[in-house]
Every structure is written in structure tokens, then in C-alpha cells.
Amino acid sequence: MPQAEHDEIMASEQYNAEHGIHLLNTCTPYQVGNVPLKGEHCAWMESSAVVYVNSVLGARTNVEGRESTGAAMLTGKIPYWGLHLEENRRGSHLVEVTTPVVTNRDWGLLGYWIGEQVPEEAIPVVDGIAATPDLVRLKHFGAAAASSGGVEMYHVPGITAEARTRDEALAGRAAVEHLRYGPAQRREAYEHLNATASDTAVDLVMIGCPHATLGQIRDVVRLLEGRRVHPDSELWVFTPRALRHVAEQNGYARALEDAGALLMSDTCPAIGQFLPRGRGSSRPTRPSRSTTSRRS
Image (cartoon, rainbow, N blue to C red; front, side, top):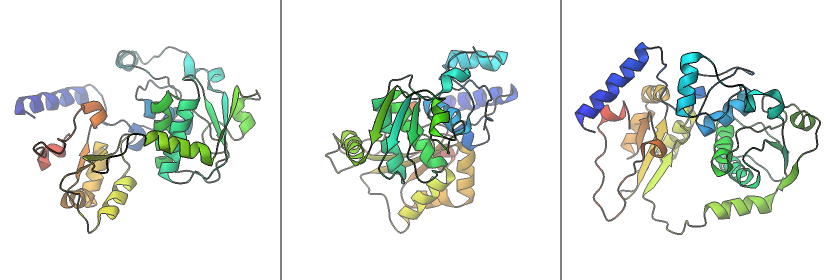
């Protein structure tokens, strides 16, 4: 990055901070202090964050844009419609899960499958979950459902904020559609996601979209212990700036660097539109340690 562009970004950050903006620089602000309470009205715009706060926390927001969130920031108001209204937060489609959903991959596959099966305005009710998932699994599930189909809210009876039972999630109404997710549907989702994955030579592995938790960073470090990233591949891990600082204190950032990986913050390839060079071209110049400590 040219020094002049770097200086402009730093000046912009300082200006925003001086005007009361919290510089969380993340698509998962609920991981680093912005945790709305149940029933709180918000103006959020990132799809995986919207579905998380609506479903897991029970706060209320539609998927806003830059203009409407900017207006909400200045006025403290947002139009009272959509998922701000109680009647629009009831479940519409019942998804009966008949196969174990335990790992991060299980939750991601379930999310992708549901997103593809239900209409964009639907609110799925996911019934049949045996074990209580953690933040990471619910984050992956919501992000997958939002990206594959545009789901903005869901209910998992007994787990998410607004539904202790299936009937409560549906508000006493019959479901518009009753779907079943079993071994066949899980296999279908897996094969669909891997339909073009025939090349085993991987240029880039990217973890952290949505941004990785501190626990996920620790897990990557443990998996890399005693190993190094292949010289023809890149491993990039993205996390909120605040969590990156903690990861540095814990030694995770140094461990990733020693293994040939990078820990970065404040953005991700989905937003920054950047990728490493593939095989057959010269290797990318790695950001300096001081640069990666500020931004990607």
C-alpha cells in the first residue's frame, strides 16, 4: 500500500473516532463489545451479523445499506417495518432435522441447504437439534443460510432467543412448508458445494469470513503445530482488530507467522477484493508485520 493511501486511512479513522464512532472494524461486532439486548432496535447491514443478532440475541434489525445506516447513526431512528415488527418475526417454514448436526461443517452444510430451500423472506424453524451449539456454530449456520438464500432470521426452539418451543416459534400457526433434513439432504448439500472441487492443489485457504473467534484462531494454531503451510499455498486468518491484539498477546499470531500463515484484521477478501497470486505467477509480497497489525 502506498504510504499516502495508508496515511489517508489513518486520518479517516482518527476523524471517525473524534466524532464518536467506535472503530470495531469487523463484520462480527457482537464478538468485540457491540452486543444488543433482546428487543433492542438496531440498524445493521452485514448479512451474517444481521441474522445472528435477530436470531441468537433477539435484537431487531433489517438488512440495511450504507445510506440507511448512516442516516440512523445521525438521527437515532430507523423506519419501523420488517423485522422490527413482532408479527414479522414468527417462523414460517419448519425444518425437521433427522441427522446429527454437531461440527462446524455440519452446521455450515445445514445453513447452506436451508438457504437454498426457503424463500428469501422466510423465517425457518429448525427443529430436532439435540445439543446446544456454541457461538461459532451458530455464526457459521447463519452466515451460510444468509449467503445461500438471504435468510435474515431463524428459530431453533429452546436455543435461540425468541422460541422455547416449536409452537412458540410458529406463533401457533401451521408452517407454510414442512422440510426434512436427513442424511440424503446433507450429502446433497456437500456434493453441491464441492461440485467444482476437483483440483487438489490449493492456492488459498481463508478462515474468518465472518471473522474468526479467538477460539478458532487457537484451533488453527494447534492444527499447525509442528507443521508449515505448503510453499505453493497461502493460509490467511481474519479476525476483529481487538481479537487480533489478544491473539498477539497469547502468541497465536507469532505461531501462525512461524508456520507460514498470516493473521489479519479490519477486512477480508470478500470486502477488500484481494487474493494471493496463484501458481505460475510470482509469489505475492507479504505485508510487513507493522502493516498487518493495522490492516490487511
